[in-house]
Length: 247
Image 1 (tube, rainbow, N blue to C red):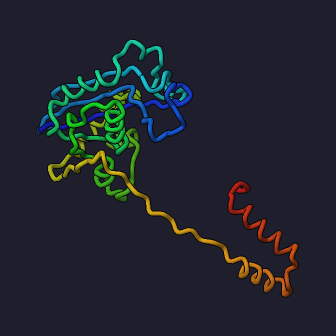
Image 2 (image 1 turned 45 degrees about the horizontal axis):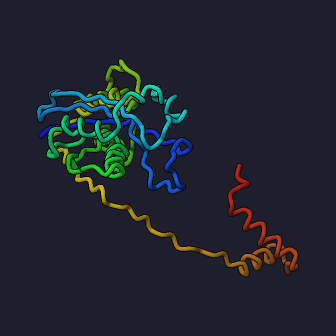
Image 3 (image 1 turned 90 degrees about the vertical axis):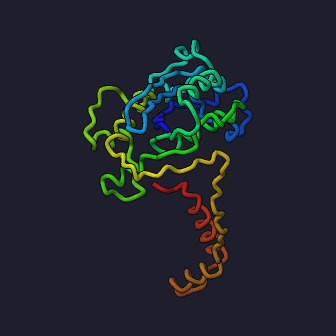
């Protein structure tokens, strides 16, 4: 059993997708870099992984992602597409009995999404994982739902910051250093189910009782509201619900 600490850089630019048909849910955030560190059960580094990915869903890197990561469209043209990089990554992992270590849930979700999109074998990936964010909060006796940014965690643990963040390999390295600082054998990995769909409870639709609203105005002004006034009150309420006039 090994620990695989990994991080992804992702891109999404619908304006550059020839296949985009308006259904955003069909198109994942496309992986453009995978960075990972493999540790043995004693937390000793066994190997590292750092690969960029040639985009095939979106033809160019969005300006925001390019600015954040420094990754450019031109840089990725010479790289291999995701299925080939995924095969190399699976070989690096060395078996699905390993445990993923992640900073937040987005990366494990997106790697399974990309695998599904490309119709390749997800069974090469571990499904056991440790999300280190809650453990970091516990380490500093912070509220359980406190989700610190990776850089903040690095600063709190006084880990030397020798490389910039928002690079998948650098972030995987920093996450590894955090993991080594806060690890305890009592940490229990959870099981990730890529087929699980979280269903949000549907909020009950509620309607305003306009009769009671008008009566409240009549009580405040000690007189009956005219038909014109009632219409204005109703319209003002409906316009207020749109939130377009909030400052």
